Length: 237
Image (cartoon, rainbow, N blue to C red):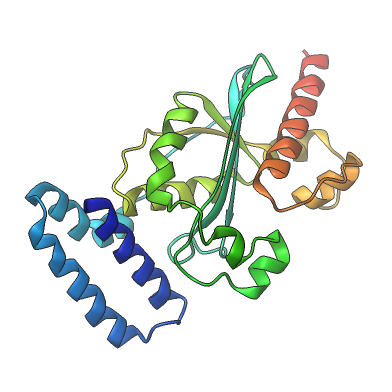
């Protein structure tokens, strides 16, 4: 019951943000849905009502490091847009490495509860039909947090992914740790002679022809980049 109402609120808020529902009418409907929380236990109700405050005050605090590690996860999140306060998650990919060897994979599409903008589909090739039967974020985030564990998160422009992840956890009332991250853009600037450090440019540098802007293929490219930088750093020690 609690998860159902939480998902309904999130879907409605997404529809309001995307302009699919008039804001004034939508807010009235949102208030109506929130009134359903009177049927729930007080602790859960208080958490739901505090969500806007949590999102507003959250400083997206996480650790950043440039120290190389041998055990890590590589994370990539595909979204409906670039604004972590308004847009939502469409796909999550996460690869786990032990001593630089792939040992486990996490992947899921996410039902955003809204129409995917055409420009988003053009970029990541994710369509409404692909996600219509996918789980909601609230059904998969706890599994992702457990998968990450206490591992360092490697990502390309990883702050983007972390902000979306933290926002989604707040909305879905899922606890998360203070993450530690390595940004491969920072490493690429040090070890690759490129004019652009986008993942597309790096993919071309490594002659990688995998599909761009899908979570797992982007994770694999990011892992390749990280391991290359790791090797270059080892040569200089």
